[in-house]
Image (cartoon, rainbow, N blue to C red; front, side):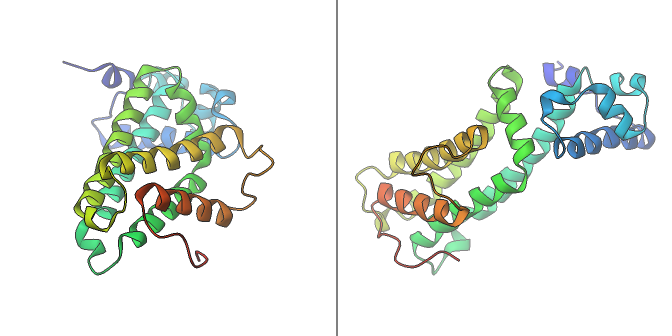
Length: 219
């Protein structure tokens, strides 16, 4: 049985149709770098893609269908990266602090790399159940991957409840970056640079996990 998402985005079955599909996706991605998603119209996407309105609606119900395709692709990429990042083999011979520090840096870098797409997806998730389900699913996956790794190194943690502390670390980082993405830095004591933000988040995450404080600048 088709899901609402499958009806919303109609995947192409032929090479030529796939090319047109990809042109709409690429056009939307380019436009997101130029203006907010709310200001992008189907006509904008069609014009940038060099295709017809009819060919657009043959593949998507509306512009949110293209955004959903973009979000789904990046979420799959995020899941793959997080799965590899949290593999215990990757961190053999390294203290758990290295995992925490690099996790913070990785998250900040991801938000900085595609802020327009992340912002559009976050805004859509507040009003559209399809985007909300997609976001909840990928966030829960990432949180569980992180927790699985940290529980495998629980002996190095100084907190009473490693599972909850891992979730608190995840919530702390994601909530901070989501809030900044939507509203910017507006409190008088907010970090003024990404390096300061990273150092602050690392210190807070280490504290939550009962680890040593940051002793050296993060490169």
